[in-house]
Structures are given as structure tokens and as C-alpha cells.
Length: 187
Image (cartoon, rainbow, N blue to C red; front, side, top):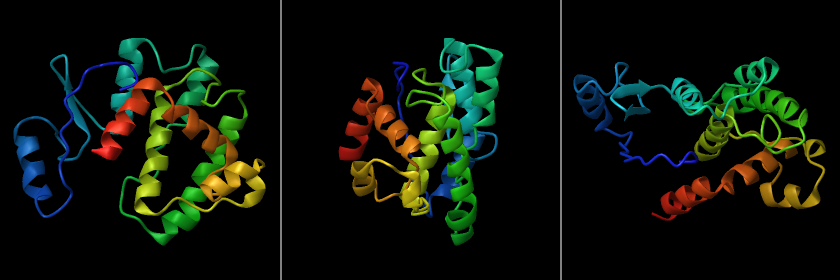
């Protein structure tokens, strides 16, 4: 979305029809693992969240660090934590540790993104993990001491560290992302 690449999005319900749909996708060569996401781009079949993001970062020459130190930071932060079912252990143990680590990385730079003002493919993965956790009810409650802006405490109910709240706001304001979110949240 953000790069302006036109796509045709197809969503499959994760219900009693998923088993049959995933078999069909595998038979059609869309996914080897019977899992999504998968996409066809310039004759290639791409699958798995992070490899897809890295592919586009490299293919477009954007969304990655400029220096080896920045590329290391991007690689070190690329963990989409909750792509499985929700659990109390995840919410109470795994997610708080994950968001605390991300908070440390994001606070190290002056901008809203991992590398300051430059968006990287990991920012897309981090946004997705926040969105996944919010949708599954596994977004951890962050201690209020991690948030210093009173407006943020009230508006987000202390669910994320301040650096990630600011990141999320900036990410959702990117023009193509904002248009996509508006279309999918209303549609």
C-alpha cells in the first residue's frame, strides 16, 4: 500500500471453510505451506510476512536501513510476535517483553519510525503485530510510567509504550496507509 503498488486483495475467512480453501491455494501453487499471506508479484509467488516485506524492501530499494548498523537494527527488530491463537501466557509474558524491547529500539531514534524519519519494512511488521494483538485482545497493558503524555494515557488507555503510540499514529497517517485503513475499516 505505502509504496503505491496496485494490488488485488483477496481475503479468506478463517472458519470451517479454511481447510478446503487452503488446500486449493496449495494446489494452485499460491502457497506451499497452506498459510497466508501469499501474493503473486511479477510472476513470483511470495509467502510469509517477513520474507514478503524484505523482498519489497530490497526490490524497491526502500524500507531498509542505509548503513550496516541501521540494517542490523532493522533485522534485530523484525519479530511479529502473535500470529497464532490468543493466550494468557502470550498476553502476560511474551507480549510485554516484546513491546518493551521494541520501545527501547524506537526510543533510540528521534522520529516515529525505527530509524527515525525513515520507514522500514520492520515498521510494517511492528504495525501488524500491534494490530493483531489489538484484534485478538492480547495487547498488553503497559505500566503508566512508560507513558508521559497525559493525552496519550487517556486516548490509548496505556496499552502501548509512548514511543509505539507515536509510531502507530505516524504510520496510520502515511497517505496510502491512511487511505487503505479508511477503505478497509469502513468497508
